[in-house]
Amino acid sequence: MNMSLLRLSRQTALFSALLVFGMSTSHAEVTPSAQAAMKSQSPIDFRSDSTYFGRLPALNFNLSSDTSLDVINNGSPDPEKTAVRGNVNPGAGSLTLSGHDWELAQFHFHTPSEHLLNGVAFPMEMHLVFSDSNKDLLVVGRWVQAGAFNSDLDPIFSQIPQNTSETLHIDHFNLNTLIPSNLESFRYSGSLTTPPFSEGVNWVMLSQPLFMSSEQINAFSSLFPEGDARGIQDLNGRIVLTDVPGFVTAVPEPETYAMMLAGLCLMAFVARGKSRPLTSDVPAGSVA
Ligand SMILES: [Zn+2]
Image 1 (tube, helix red, strand yellow):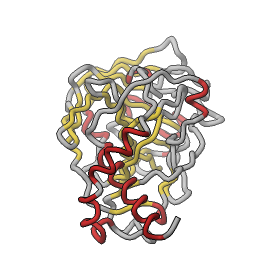
Image 2 (cartoon, helix red, strand yellow):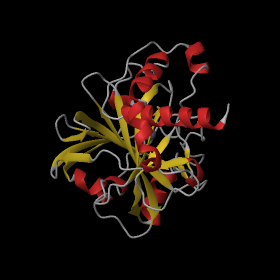
Image 3 (cartoon, helix red, strand yellow):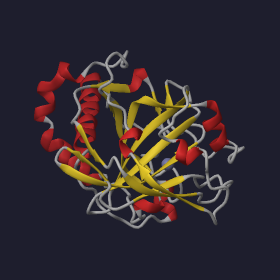
């Protein structure tokens, strides 16, 4: 491929990636052969030399500051499941992105982190799972770093259900404590990180970590001596976007070829039609 074709191809992929957010995706059965062909899997390593910088559509969260939660342990130490999941009441949380509405179904945690940042893992990672009226999925991820004691999350981590028969009911929880004020992020199209690894999942990984004390992190990770994080998956040419200033080091910033992007609009739609994402009807509430 010559350089101009390569650049054109990269830019088409970039535009496709931009279209991913706020647009619905199609549904299809995920057969074993389809799984073998899956090339857009999660998690990934966010690397400075393979990420594009640009202005991204705003994340408009609308989260209840006082809602009840049912916290479950859905199968530790099963490595394919998460130990702690907070099931959220319908209507308690939503996200609007590019005019598209997503409703929060649940949030849960992994240890160590599933996504990496320039090859580095964090002690834990939180996933907030949203779905839309088409049952498409958008996951907002956030790394967890060891630091100060987190009193907001203490009601969960001081009383983690130790087995699948326990449910911890929390009467009052402020969902806003899960989200930072700085919403800079990494975005890409990926998959569930647990079976059936369905694709077409919109990923928004927030760059600002959540801090929890080492004791709080240990309360979770002790349930998973082997961890419950899936390994890093190949990008396979996917475009990763970020609005974190200074993160991107070696890739030209989109502004330098913004003029070309406008002309690629039609092309991007064609590309989307040819590579339909392999989403499935996995309920958002069961995603780990
Ligand atoms: Zn997860």
